[in-house]
Structure formats: structure tokens, C-alpha cells
Image 1 (tube, rainbow, N blue to C red):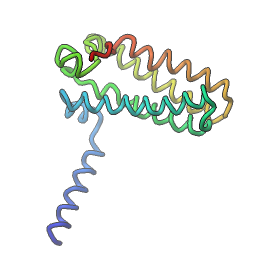
Image 2: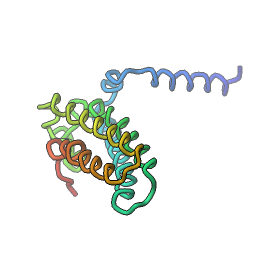
Image 3: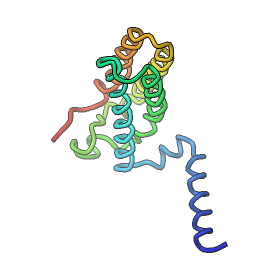
Image 4: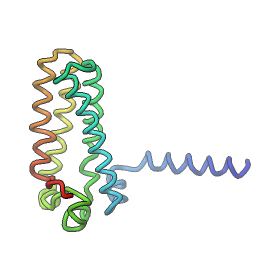
Length: 163
């Protein structure tokens, strides 16, 4: 096996090892700015999926299947949220411009985890409702997800944007 082959084998083994890591190990591995960047990426992903959902509800763009797919993605991403907030990666540890994560997260980690779990549950409900295709039911569940899931967490645990 040549050098390129050995490099490929090592790279594949490293990727497989990362895939097998538990969320606790990943949580421990993420610190400081790496954690901030990872969670900002997750939140941007959720925002992108919410735009697909809102386009269907508000403008009739896309399909109920698109809503189901985006809601499923939001649920999957939101399951990882607590692991993306290791202690020492919020405001007070970093400038307000760098992160919007408030110290309340670590003062009330149980409440924060519950808020993330609510987002997961409401997004999963939306995916189920969307599969039935009833636009009014979808709109109602989107409102519930926005208020009780994303919105409730952001209201308590996310600070204002600082320019």
C-alpha cells in the first residue's frame, strides 16, 4: 500500500472514530470558540429549515413534505443543542459580540435541557402533522413550535445581538 493509501485508511479510521463518539465525549471535546462556532452552525441550520417551513405556511411555497423534512432536521439538530453549550462558552467568558448564550444556561442547565427537549418534541410533532398534509394543522403546530420550543428557549437563554 502506498502513502496515499495509508493516508486514506488513517483518515477513514479517524472519521469512523468520531462517528462512534458519544455526545458526552463530543461535549467534552468542544470548548470555547469551537463550541460557539458549532452551535452557531446548528442554529443557522435550524433557521434555514424554519424559513422553508414559514415559506409554506405564509406564502404557500413548497410542499407539506418539505415541511416534514425540515421539521425532522430541526428535531435532529435540536437534540444536540445541550452538548453544544459546554461551561465556559457563554457571555461573561467571551465578548457579547462573540456569543448570545446567557449565563442563565449554566445556572439552570436542567431548564435549558428541558427547553431543548421541548423544541425536539414540538419539531417531531410538526413532522408528523406535516405528513398528513393539512395546512391549517401545520400552521397551528408551527406556531406551537415557535412559541413553546425555539421562542421559549431564546427568550430565557439568548441575549440580544450586539453589533
